[in-house]
Image (cartoon, rainbow, N blue to C red; front, side, top):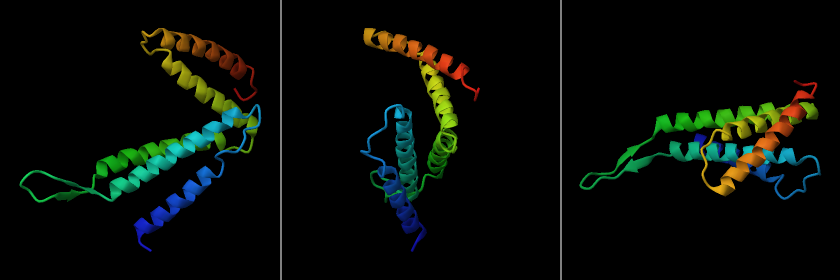
Length: 150
């Protein structure tokens, strides 16, 4: 088996793992765990993109034979994104302590919501969304500050 075939086999196994949770009901109170599926899909897409980039392409110009190339720089960028996604996934969901995982997830959500608060919006719908997210931020802060994991 070639390296490329082995990689495709690993991608297939990873896809099966990611899809193994698809469609399963989420127990009330565990909705936060749905982000594990979302991050897994994101990681799978990064890994698939790396494979596509590694297969190379060709620059096609008029009057010139196609010039084959592999964009190593882009592969490195996507590899970094894949590693970052994996690290976030592992940090959020990798502990056996479910309360710690939920605390970390809440802190992660808080960070994302807080980042969006600085966005310039002009549509009324977007303004209302930011207001709702601001209320969610306050709820998360209270929850996190009360946690023994802080």
